[in-house]
Image (cartoon, rainbow, N blue to C red; front, side, top):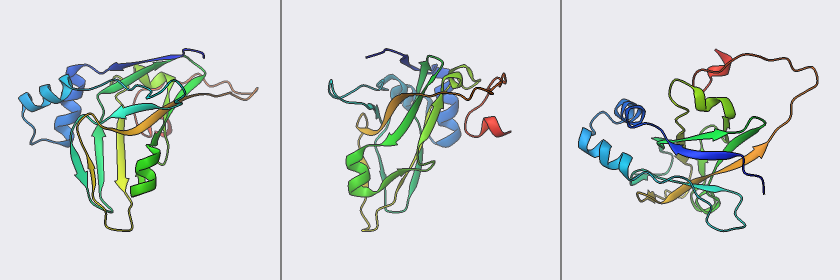
Length: 170
């Protein structure tokens, strides 16, 4: 198999800024503890296509509720590849767990954005049976798969990205 990427943590400053923006009640000590416990994504088995993303915190979401999680993770990817992020199959089956953008596409140039390519994951428990989803800290809740892509012969794009969600359409 071809090795084309490397997961890294974002800097503590980037993580802290992002976390405070979403969870302003969190103390600096709590943020440091969360950051220090962040796990880089890994594959569970030799045959796994997906790299499991682990939750930096414990959380519960009821049916029809949504949460946005700053993962603390970034990825450096070779040009011609991207990272697709999907819900874990079992959680999708049991809770209809969905990413709010259906599939997250992490482009190779996102790594160089002002936010250090910080990957955020927004998920919804779309269960129709009023099931509460309970994710523990360091439990896998979504997975990333590295995929190649091609471009058209007439493609002559030379724009540079700087930003996250929706930045290429601004």
